[in-house]
Image (cartoon, rainbow, N blue to C red; front, side):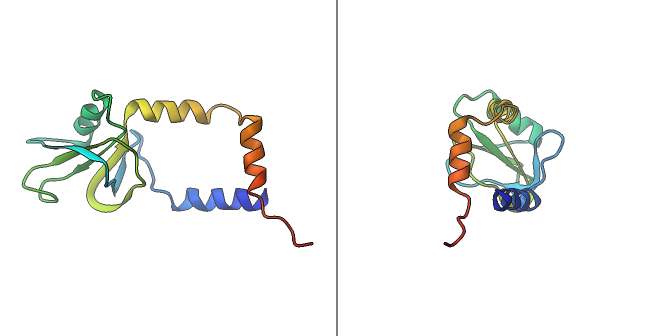
Length: 126
């Protein structure tokens, strides 16, 4: 169990930091893009709102003007791939997905989840 806690702590230290709104500035997601929208005066908040109104959207990435074209660009994704460092970009999860994850993190693990975690613990050599 100690190894699991150490691994979780390391993942937390290396994970992208989310802002108060749940945005990850300086990060983007790629793959499973199903719509790209050029925005005259687009902001990350406007991109998130577009994602929130689309039932297919699971995550979004916004790029400032000049990064992927002359205008800010909003990419809507049908999955939530791992973010990668991308200066000039901002990414986030769909509001509905973010709410579901928040709700799931507030509950205690089930017996099956505890069993699965225990199965991943390293066993000492005999």
